[in-house]
Length: 312
Image (cartoon, rainbow, N blue to C red; front, top):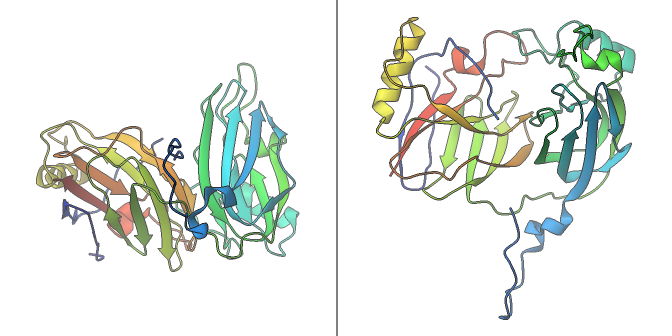
């Protein structure tokens, strides 16, 4: 069993000791001013240093997409005006020709189906995608270089053939230019840190905005956060997952997804907002379902990369 870690504020952490067979993915504001003099802000945590960008997706094109983005912390507004779901995945290309990347993409890269990922993909960012007619806001870090922005979804509008959206035109090259040399996320309520292969979790009751960091050092990770119904303990959750591994009913209600960090390669991070505040007495699950760069089963299965905790 791979070691798991939890460094939590006021929580009891239970490491689930078995691999997961069924996998899946789920889906800060500035305080109002006052008359009192505000203390000087730490410039490294200044939200004004974030770089806002907007991407609009239609069926099947990006109608708004920047050609250049400053490196550092990016605040993305992603609007889907189409009839089907879309994403904006981002892959660092280095010196790799576009034709080579498209060939790898057609061969299954980014499908998270157990296939090995190309070695040149050292920068990977996939924020959550909005439903048709929806908008999401995502904050994440980016480093300089050539990037492909694309959508691998195949969902089609009525009467359309189901083929990857990047084949229909949702594929563009974007340059991330030199920007903030020392990007730092604004403070959040809590933090989650992914490593190869485990989590450090610092959350307490009332937390909702979370800073996520992938410390790797090599693998791509994400965290989906799920909450169990009231009364379920971490021990019960562990036993339920053990039953699921054997193809048996869990025996307790399934957890509900309440947050998703987006997929990020080592050295990158994001800020995300849970659908609800962390609650005292509730059990939460933190899981990663990306496979190793070399391919194989997802980290939840191959390296036991998931963690159950009960908040005090």
